[in-house]
Length: 58
Image 1 (tube, rainbow, N blue to C red):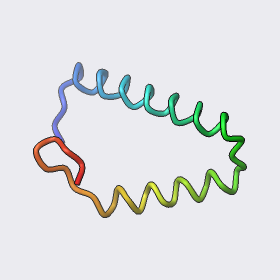
Image 2: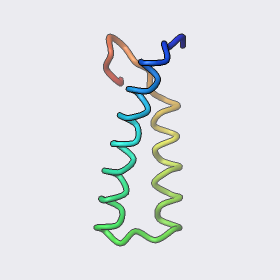
Image 3: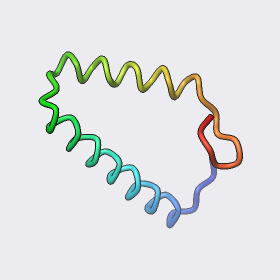
Image 4: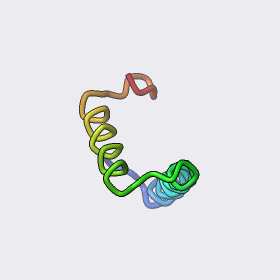
C-alpha cells in the first residue's frame, strides 16, 4: 500500500488507540499470558482469512 506520511501517522494513531483499548479489556479480564497468546493466534487467523471490501472487513 502506498500511504503518504500523514496517512501513515494517522493510521498509526488509530492502531495505537485500538491496542490501548484491547489492553484495557485484557487487563480488566485478568487474561494470562497463555490466554493472550491464544487470543493473538485467533486474531491472526481471522485477519488472514479476511479481506477488505469497500472499506469493510469481510
